[in-house]
Image (cartoon, rainbow, N blue to C red; front, side, top):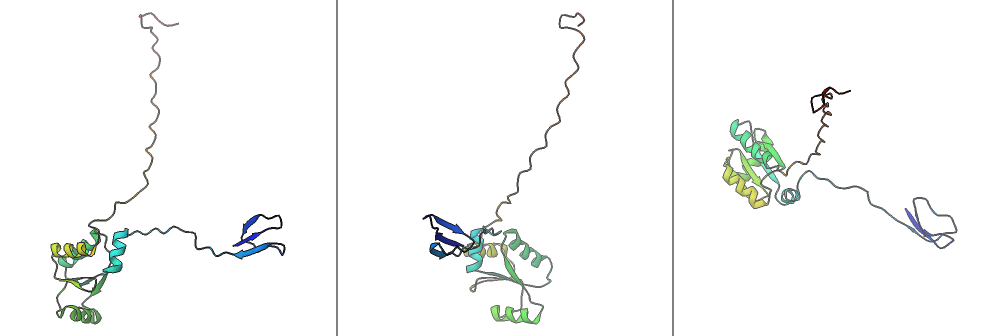
Length: 165
């Protein structure tokens, strides 16, 4: 993009370089023209930057599924680490000193061993995560138009009882 003054003294903005007669030529850099639209609400985004959530889990059945469902229900982005793998087991051992799961880590200091919904909710609240998913915004579909009602055929008899001509 260029800004310059043309020979008649008018200020011009153009995406093409000016001719040699232009004065005060200034190349301009424009940033991208887009609107950022993040699916995460601002509070969840800020909380995830300050207190990232990590779930240490394995195929432990209903308890681990319920733990993961809690995070999904609240719309919390999280990293899942499988402690059945050697690397995941080492990370869990370094964090808690134990090999029990599920474990919830919120940031680097908040850790909850074992699934306890009230405790996990409190940790997530303390970190500033929203309590529920934001409402979904879906365009409202227009209602289908009702078909026109058929008018009853005119009566062959007038209101006073005589036949109509």
